[in-house]
Image 1 (tube, one colour):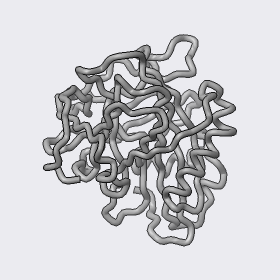
Image 2 (spheres, helix red, strand yellow):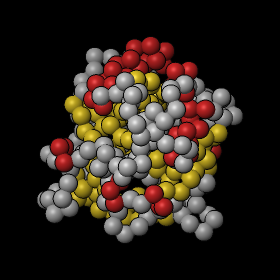
Image 3 (cartoon, helix red, strand yellow):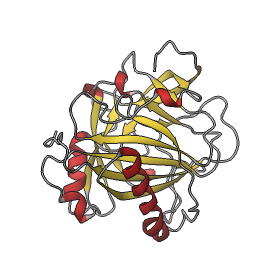
Image 4 (cartoon, helix red, strand yellow):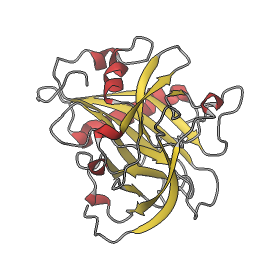
Length: 285
């Protein structure tokens, strides 16, 4: 999308990696009050509302797309039902849209902006992530398929060597979004050198690696205003192909001056896809 295209903008604070030994270096999953006290580099940036420009953004150029993908599934508070029913729907959607040979859902998170952190005992809801991040670093994506303490379908870690693969978050609002919208960094304006590794710690004791983002002038941020039920954001978490395409898309919830209404409720499902028979896989970054 040309940066000269007319869009409306909001100016809002985003939380970036703080350099100098004081920045966030680890985070507990699911998000909890153990994550309080982290310091960030807060920058007020312009975030463009690109509603009406949906076809100007692609996964391989920018790292994300907006799709129209209604679902009849509604029982998102039932984790077993999500696993047994919604996962198959998400896998089928990505296989078709991406022309992939295989797709495996690898977890989901139900989010609400009602409270900054889940209640005690733990709620089934998680708060929106409030700093700009990638769910997996490039190294962490490979670890995600091999870490024995993290759930992973057996098939996802046993594809032929050098098979191209990628991971995506299918982000779906469960109510119309009137607050805490999702800001996305256009990966064509973000250097890999500004992705800071971030250790993620899980209740099982498993450890993986995500990434936070260093701020740099020239980075571009967008969002879709007024997202509705039936729309989904497809966000690239990782791509094994190193041919110049976008390999991830940093993102975060943000608070804008026009925020209003009830808490944002959303669900995200992470899906790994493979293209067997094609070339372009890579070794661990």
